[in-house]
Image 1: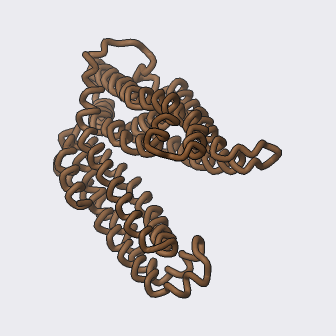
Image 2 (image 1 turned 120 degrees about the vertical axis):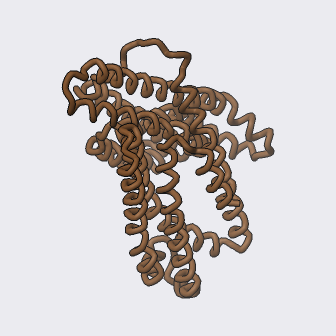
Image 3 (image 1 turned 30 degrees about the horizontal axis):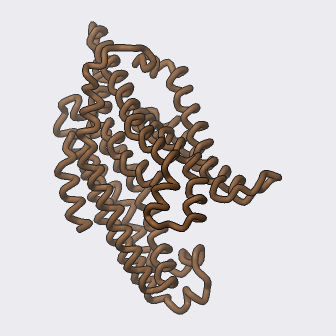
Amino acid sequence: AVLDWAMITEYIISSSTALLSAEYAKRSHLLTLEQQHARIKEIELTIGAIQQQNRLAALLLSVPPAIVLFYFTTNILKTLGVDDGVADSVADFTNYAAFALPGMLLRVAEYNFLYSINKENFLSIVMLTDIALGVILTGLLVPGYLGLPQLGVKGSGIAALLQSIIICTMLFTYSLKNKDIRLFKLYETRPNNNLRYTKEIITLGLPLVFTSGIANLSELIRNILVGNLGAEHLQISQTYMSWSYIVTSLVCVFAKVGGIEVGQQLGLNRYQQMKKVGNTSTLLCLSIITPAVVLAPLLSSQLSSVFLSEELIHSHKDLLSTLFLLAFVTNAFYGTQNSLNENLKNLKDTLFTSATTVTSYV
């Protein structure tokens, strides 16, 4: 519930790039001209207002469910008929992880802000630190290494909370100290314009939330159907899907950056350049996937050995090769779709992207 809510509402917060990238492009363009100081200051304040209200949207979407999870997890699960012992164990996790939820969405807000203002170098450092912290903290606290107590599932929740605190501290310290970001006056009070930008971000993101919900439901149904075939088939399914997700994640990064560039060109009214950027982004995504489509079936046994026993790989060798091929061919279409969807999102069109994505999942 914690992770699904974070992933679903992430789409709302990510919609802020459609507003931020266009405004930042206008500012960058005006910096090359003379006698435009007043207009530059106006745009900088607009960018600051958008990000302030983006943070507010992140808190509005995370604090209420965090409170519900903290106080009512056990009761909700027991009402649904979950065993008392399991419900208590889940509560051990959510008592800590629930309060990581605001940090998860605030991180998304800051990540998209830094993407939009071309701070990719620092963002790369933070994201790598984020991944490393998740692995290290969970690896230490769950089994209890280096003399630490063995906390089990509670340790996973504590790790998620500590991870959120550390990464948010890095991000907010950077936004306080960086001279370029200080121009946006993120920590100064200003008229909220009836939360105009918060409303616009949520409005843009809501269709994507529905899409994400359908995607999660589709994944759940797939796992149930495969699971009914037996544990071996479920293991095989999770193996090729895990490798597929790795390639997909890489494609999503390039698609997001391409979408932001499209938004910046829109802010400058450079429509021909916008089209070129969009097409280049889509071709780049395809260029990443194409080698994987060729190599994955050939290396299916080696890739599967990370997760599966040699006996299981040998007995299902042809099936694994076929599944890897199908998965990565599907990824080629998904990469194209994701790139086009990011471009459209930064053109403030989320209804069409949601409709096409939902249709594909159905």
